[in-house]
Length: 216
Image (cartoon, rainbow, N blue to C red):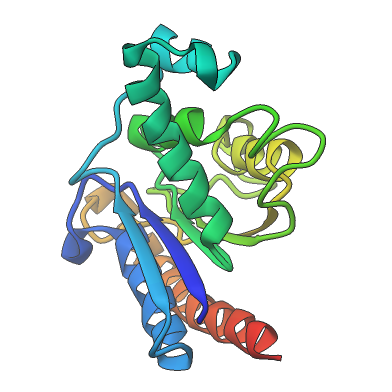
């Protein structure tokens, strides 16, 4: 049975979150193809992970046989997250742009799950796993736009997920999500609606395509 790891990080519920709407569309299409499969859902807003501290970090660079009780407890969480990633046949990650970058809760997941010599390094344990990132944003940071230099979501996640962890990364980018609620962006509402519909369709198409690849 196929396993999907779904990471949500928006602070808003699905009705008010562009990224959650798209991850939900991805999940629906995935489950239609894999009704008996497994979805591991990490909602980092509802159930945030602790930020990496010195105890957890040092445990990742030392022999487990030498771990103190505090290191054992901290490292157990990191191992749990690594195992979830390693079990996944596909990963979908919601990464809304907050203040030009990813939510701190998503950064906490990355810091915890990245274990050198296991999920990162020369032979990452989840290398090649397809990872679809839903990089929603209130405006547009696309190439050629005035805010292109402030795009620190896709650039960062491409480097970490692909360059560091060996995942096969693809992006879906719902943009201009603030247009319906910001009068100054009223003329951009049609572009927002087009972007939203494309993101939802791309998510469903991507989920279905991945499911078919796994079935084959």
